[in-house]
Image (cartoon, rainbow, N blue to C red):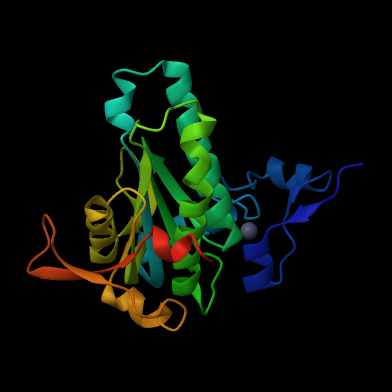
Length: 247
Ligand SMILES: [Zn+2]
């Protein structure tokens, strides 16, 4: 007999038990409510409800946004066996999902060898910024064995670069012909640009994020960054291997 799982978001916000797994979930599925792809313990109703709201107005949410990318993947794919590459990507996707879900974020999307994760929606957490950085640290540590697991040797340069930024984002559906449910706005853009500036094995966080986590990670070094499409310079605080490896 399978056990029943209820949507955590609907329960936390509405005290509504929506079954997403197990025998009770069948009637819900008949009405088009099922398990969300973005989080195994959430249902699709949040997304559906949101689509309705978005027709009226734009919803702004205090979020933390994490971008992570598998460095070296494109270059390696030109020389390596496709099944190896597949294994590498699978390992990366699995580790991303596990780390993000552990800290109550959602995987908004995988884009090739990169991931976009959002925190504080729809599971709202007072410490969502800290959660996002904890996710980044966890992901870096989990990915340490990725190369060996995919059968690559030591000189093959593979690693994860991560950027985390926090602030108000707009969440909802974009587009008419092709609909995309995602977060948009400057916070997302900066997190994305920051990630491209991170070296393999590095986590770069903005001053906004640093402010919320500096008690946990004191004395972080910083770099002044010039980022494409962003005016002026951005201070990026660096959480490197020497910091997360010893936790
Ligand atoms: Zn739900």
